[in-house]
Length: 220
Image 1 (cartoon, one colour):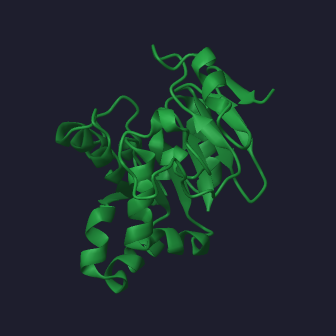
Image 2: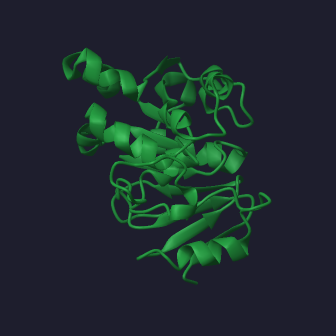
Image 3: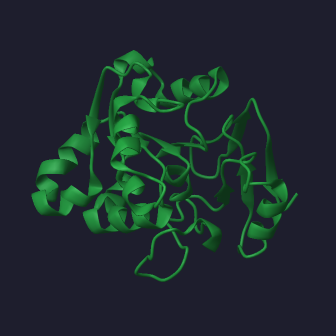
């Protein structure tokens, strides 16, 4: 998949331009599916915050960018309806818009639903992650970001990319010093990004940082 891994969504013109480049066609000609599942695993998220994401009422409303169509894909429902029903919906989408919350909860339901197994085949699909929706693509998220009790008992996630992500740099608890401490527990490189920054992965082994804010690669 082509990845746009953000901290705070499509929050500035540079990130939006990167998204259009990944899509290869105007947003108005693309069909999207939004995935709110990670919200249910985080204690700070509520039914109201999930609705705001789906309705495009959040701070950086990625569902409200002007897509040709937007549908809802709730991963917790997929095992009960069967892959033969939901897989065509996913294959028909140009982009998956994946909200934040708890990345280990999202990881669990990506596996349980079967969507994780399908991802390698979606070579023409763009994944737009927000916070945990981005972190789930990394090998590990660090214990500081685990708010759910994953069956694995650890902080491992999909490992589609080979780096970790520390999001929301600049929030009161998300300081650069905290990021440096967080990175010490990880086995590989990491990006520390604020809500005006995105990591673009247009193909295997390709990584570009697009930012109108602050970011850092660890180790330097």
